[in-house]
Image (cartoon, rainbow, N blue to C red; front, side, top):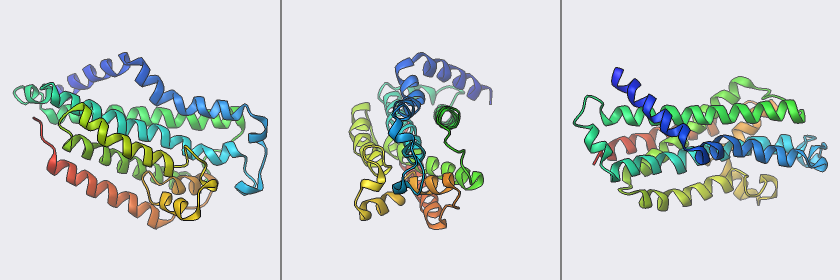
Length: 244
């Protein structure tokens, strides 16, 4: 436990020193929210969004931004870089096992995701009157399972990528797919119906987040698929992961 605390302290310092990555992963979704919220037309109720404003409708998609960036871009790249530079191999010879480093990275990833999500929710509520998630339990479950699914996919990339460049090559397509089906590049109501339905079941399951935010309990199938992805991808990553 002492070794883990030491590694977590070191990794936290490194994480906080990387200001461009920190500000992007934590602050970008809120920045996008503020820019959109300053457009008067997007703050007016619209029948296309069941009487919601566009800002309210789009808020769950903003959560996808941080989830995708942290879980798919940052986490695999960091772990692959450590493997490429021999950091994991050297740790294996010390009381601080490589597993402690992996756990520390997951803790930092979760912390960044949580801070970013809370920032989006609070700014949306205080600055633009967006209601808080109306089904808190369903939203929490959907968010946790969606986060777990994407982190598991990120770990799977880290498990099979031997170098940082390989990790980036694998992460970019998954990042683009996650952002597209999450409604970040194009609002989901503009997508063809079959693409929107695919997005319902694509991690992190933005439809479950949207349902819970507007007060509808998330559909069990959506949540079950996120759980299956988390278990299967996480288990496969654990099986394939190599420290060297």
